[in-house]
Length: 135
Image (cartoon, rainbow, N blue to C red):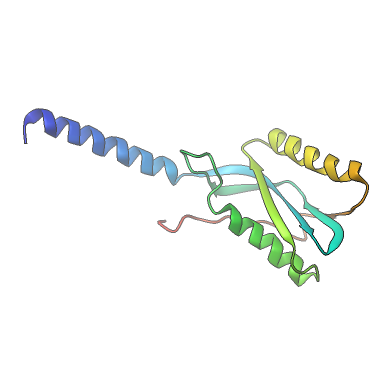
């Protein structure tokens, strides 16, 4: 290998290692959950919660294991008697942005007037942070 190739190899290795470490840093996010069922007119909203150890994919800016956060809410609701709920989890890096998303979704269901809206307090349900499997 020539000296030039060694420098390129070292630079690429360094860039790759920086990308990996950036991917696995926990961040504070603000998230809420929403649940609905095709069999019921009741919808549920959780409080906006601060989760201190969430992981964001640095390339896609997507919450790592977002579906598993939704499963946490679905399992909670199933234990409360609201089976077969379709749940989503929405998040933002600031409380203000999370509130904006929360209010927009809530407004959609309030203005429709066809649904019963129930709120889940953080004291009743709290999201648990999910770590990447490589950690």
